[in-house]
Length: 362
Image 1 (cartoon, helix red, strand yellow):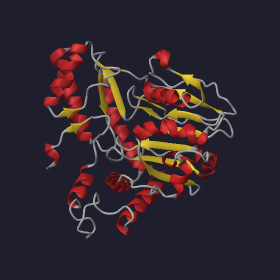
Image 2 (image 1 turned 60 degrees about the vertical axis):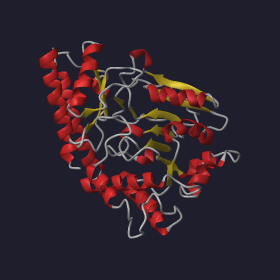
Image 3 (image 1 turned 135 degrees about the vertical axis):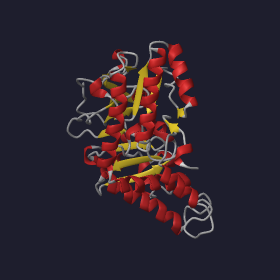
Image 4 (image 1 turned 30 degrees about the vertical axis):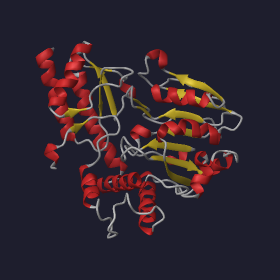
């Protein structure tokens, strides 16, 4: 299938993947590296798959410049399982601090509170989750400080990471802006991401943990919830999501070919600028959700004058192969997710449609 026949995919996740990655997977589907088998068929203990997962880790370390005192794990259960695994492994009997800026950090807090003490260090819920907190109430003895770098539903993204008190590890859910921009891994204790937004198909969760924090893992945790055991087994304690890890590895290679995360960020900024410019110049016909200083480069939610117009916008857009524009069911409206693999041509198609729709309905 040529690129011309592919949809303009604005889905929030599972989401658009690079065309060349899909084509490589297609080409290797029936015979991976001369094995006569698909990646989905080879043993996870084989030398061929060991090379796949080792290369994926090496390429991710290169992209993010991950220091040697951090472990990289390819796990299952999605980012949502990490909401529970984090306090299980890091908190012990203490308390943890949470910055709540949207639905996903709020959910993470609730999961953590089921397992022990967690407190809100800051929340923007009263403002409708449209901004980044101006100040924090931080516990200097907290087990960790948790935040979500980019809230997929509300389109709010931290431009820089919050600063934790000395000795308090910073923990980040970076699912929806994973490998979208450079970051300093050494500032974090734990980073995790469900890959199905920027880095692959659903089914793989990348977890990056600083070595010393693995010593906090209690000895009585179930083995598949135990960071220390999973790190020691190099993500191979049981059968991993082999095909998903293979696809993630191909995406890492694609990002490196683009020139690394600094170049990826430039492209993402260009796409976001074009879309936000169209919103801002619409005279209020399109209204963005997030305040300008907190706008996401990955997820752009916006409203139209009426829900009926929003329904028509999504329906008519789908006829033009502009797919996945309906907002999350919890908030409604319109949302365009513009992840790494979405092309500038897709953004142009959307903004052209937005101007046409406003002309016809404004």
